[in-house]
Every structure is written in structure tokens, then in C-alpha cells.
Amino acid sequence: MSEVTVRFVGGPADGLVRQVPAEPDGTPPRRWIMRHPDGTGPVQPGPDHLYERGQPDGLGGWSMRFVRTDAFGVSE
Image 1 (cartoon, rainbow, N blue to C red):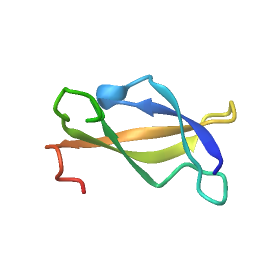
Image 2: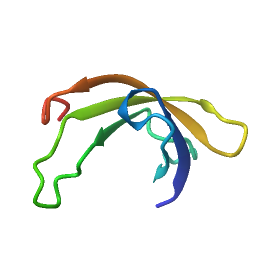
Image 3: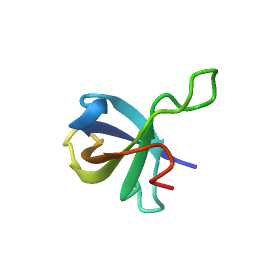
């Protein structure tokens, strides 16, 4: 599976640059749910932050723009 670099814009992940799985055409997913913490440790999972694919950033990556925050599990 290939990955693409995205920069999160707005919301709690503002400015975070991360690799996410790429769609078959090389673009990031249309929507991405950011969870923090990820729930794999002893800390309880937090809210879900919804981001949507933006535009290419001109540096080989893409932007993901903040849409909203939902309580944990609402986005599933």
C-alpha cells in the first residue's frame, strides 16, 4: 500500500504533517478521522476529529482541512 504526505489544517492537528494511505490514484482519502489518543495504551480514547482532503500543496503533498470534532465513536 502506498502512502501520501498530508498537512492537517485547522482543528487540533493544525500543522501536523503525516503519512496516510493513498487512494489508487495517489491522492489521500476524501475523509480522514483523526483520533487522539489512539486508544492502544492505557489512556481512554478521545474525540474523533474529521478532516477532508484539500488541495495539493505544491511540495508533493496534500492538505487535509478540519471539518468538525465528534464524541468518541460517533464517526464510526
